Image (tube, rainbow, N blue to C red; front, side, top):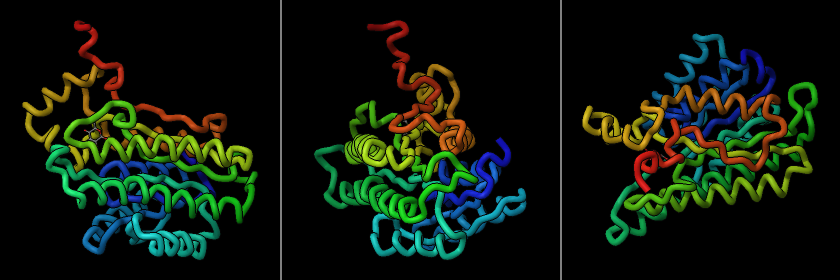
Amino acid sequence: MENTLKGQTAIITGASSGIGTGVAKALAAAGATVVINYPVESSKPDAEAVLTDIINAGGTGMTAQCDVSKEDQVIRMFADTVAQYGTVDILINNAGLQRDAKFDEMTLDQWNLVINVNLTGQFLCAREAIREFLRRGPRPDVSLATGKIICMSSVHELIPWGGHVNYATSKGGIKMLMQSLAQEYGDRKIRVNSICPGAIQTPINRAAWETPQALNSLMSLIPYNRIGQPQDIGNLAVFLSSDLSDYITGASIFIDGGMTVFEGFATGG
Ligand code: BGC
């Protein structure tokens, strides 16, 4: 899919690690100019390393520090991007985190942090992206759609997740955020979709794959019997950003090695 995104600028939130890094590299390889967002000063070296890899592979972009849960910082990141590259064509609403706890032990801080970053962060970034798409209007020379938003959801917008109620709630919220935006702005040719990853090998779920025992137990949830890689998600993000998916909007696309077909039912039930 080389050059499918040529001439387009993409902001990828949370791109200094994990799935965000995989998506940034895939979009850059497809020709997009990428804005590699990172949350705090301490993640700057990681973001710069991602940018260096992208430049070495022939891509272009810049890094941008911004805590997506802070309105002023989000507004500034979009303004800086427009000042630098003229507009934004693609938003990958990816930044997210987990603060796991048994529900009866969950603190309000754990709840608020996850909702603020995972859900309010997606609201703030989507709002700035849509404002920019409406201001700029169509660019038929680069894409059939006036703008594209991809929300990073999870299999946990469908599968309830005890011990992670704050996280599952944020992903359930993202489903309705995404679908309501697709409904409200479809006539302005803005496409909004979600990617719903299963277990992807990144720092967020290290405990689920770092020992052979943990990985073996994870495989009981994945019919396809392998853990996902950030590149798997990057490939789908390129497709959903490109005109190859021009008739897809309001969709949650699961990419999970079959986790959502509930493998236990192959022999149970
Ligand atoms: C979570 C991971 C988890 C996966 C499958 C993701 O959304 O962030 O920690 O491994 O869902 O349960």
